[in-house]
Image (tube, rainbow over all chains, first blue to last red; front, side, top):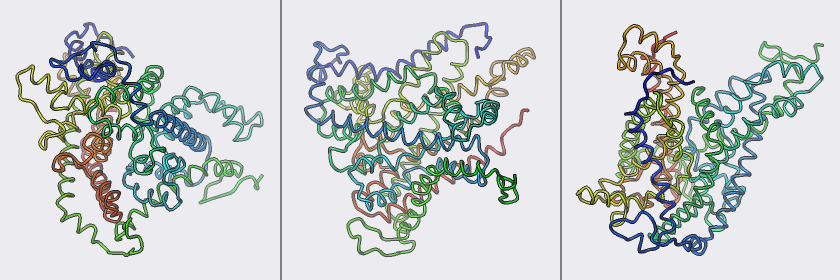
Length: 275
Length: 305
């Protein structure tokens, strides 16, 4: 959708480039600083490039906190939550798009209302419920309360709506039942959109903070964000170590982002417009 | 044929379709029931009780006591004021920066794709990990921000460690973190404006300013409304960055927001009932604000078609 403008906007370009440098400066600072020695950190005038590349900071992260454990906890819970969330939402979205059932409008507005009640509002009853089920400090306790996402559902609804109705009809004529249509027509035709929804859900779970914070007391169940919060207190301003931890938490996400950027941005605009 | 169809509420439905819908929607319905409807009713119920994590056996219904307590609690008042200050400054700055950047990105500009990616990158990054970077930025002694201030001949600031500056420092972080999201939304809105509208205006001799105020901004209104509405919801529930950067609510509770208050009441003091009452007030505020915003834009929306 390129606009037909005659003149290149050089002034705008210079301004936006300056702004974009501010946006990525923290990442550059983080990466460079994760290799700094303590004396580099305290140097004045500030030293941008490490005087000597110190890889020990990365080792120290693992010595100071069970970083590997946190990492695995985060991977495990995020993957499982994403799987559950996506399964629920694929089934629900397909029903919304392809099936006719009573109470559709009511269910739709119910799902919509979950978007407008921030999870913090229901946080305490949720905590009470989970603790009564003896799920505090368990993976199930971390995961189960976070698998409902209206955002993912609407994203998939808008993706599935773009599948031509003819495909449904011809499958029906071939004698496919509704489940077969979902498995053999809808899912194969939406592979790329489903993977976008998966990425989105995963990124959301990967950075989830408040719920894992309150539901874990034992160190062994902490996810990465929670572990890193406590690293701040435990490392007492060893900034270079904090940066090494941040690099390990951020870089995988940035790589995923660079690969899937187009889809991510497209989905944001899609749901943004619809809502 | 009639046994394959049935009427519900005067409408004819296919039985096979109904069965499939039930099966497919069951997990979603259960999730909504357990993770949404049930907790919503419980939060209201608890808010009228003295529910205490430490003294569980002394559970009583105490009417509106929690709410009257909140209205007289100095800490809650402070959290309320802080939250409004935070939300207002973030909404204003975030929305206007995003709009300006999107307007410029929508012109003919080299490396547009790269620039958009740079603005959007902080959005996808985990909030705790990026907070760690900014904690260093805000260090009054060896943080880059104060080093830049020193270079410019300014006095050092206390940033997140100063009573007057702490909240605004977090607003700064929060804008960096979130502005890309709104830029993407605004940009998509701008790109959906048909070129022909702009060209027609240019043929009629409209200036760029007139095109901006008379065409682009009015047509962007639905997006602007959405951005502001999401902004209200999101800024009022801010917690992670505040909790990571100022774990104890900042100097003299200067960064204590409503969510921090709820968290502290519930999980430090064990006062679940009181925390639930605060949650309900938080929801009421968000609800009222989005309602007002909806009313305002309903009266202002210009129908172009």
